[in-house]
Length: 323
Image 1 (tube, rainbow, N blue to C red):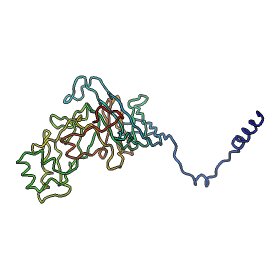
Image 2: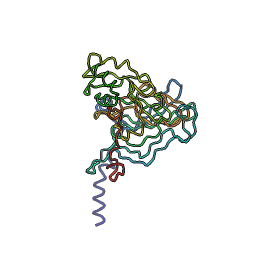
Image 3: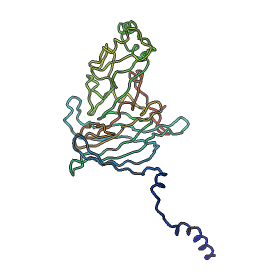
Image 4: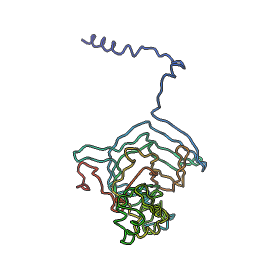
């Protein structure tokens, strides 16, 4: 019995154990394509910093929940306008990636080509970055503080704008040819700002909206005089008395990516000094500490979302934040 088993094992492994390895010719190699699981790149930037980037050729679907994301909790004095003692660079309560349907099935957060990168100033490590080639899915949480670059496309029917305007302003909008169904959008993306005055503020921000000087423009359903709106700019968190600044924590779930198209350029970084991270030749400036980057095209909201916030979607099988 033992002899038979030995013969069977020998028969099974012998074709592999004794097969000879032969090199492929250049023409044979040309018939094959592929990509390494790990790609390592070296580069420099305008600051003469050196970067080593490790990219993993992977598609990843994940569902993740955390009670608290708290990064960069230290005293900093480079943001006197919005600085609050005891605040953090990034602080998000009840953080989640992905969602859960009513029937219990998952909608995972999808990422491709995840990477991490190291930044060196000479022999000193000055920054670490974690990012994705692309990302698509829902990000949920109660955002208390956010340091970084957050650009939000604001576009949709003008009805919420008219509903939040005074009677006189609503009359002026009607004269300009802006009806409830007129499609409006912000000329520039909404950004992180101080919700008390509308100034751009990328460090430990608590608000998001149209920064001072930004305006709205008509996209479709425009009247003869609707172009006048582009000359009405935001000032001190308002355009003609209509609010243009909002608390970050009122947006409990955000869609990363638009209309099924993933967002590119998202990353989370940590640096001991200001570092310009490089992607495809384009530099993204960051400040010291923890920094989150979600560039233009990553998030889109309508005016109803802006004025009324976004409710949190279900992220757990048993979710106390979901009715």
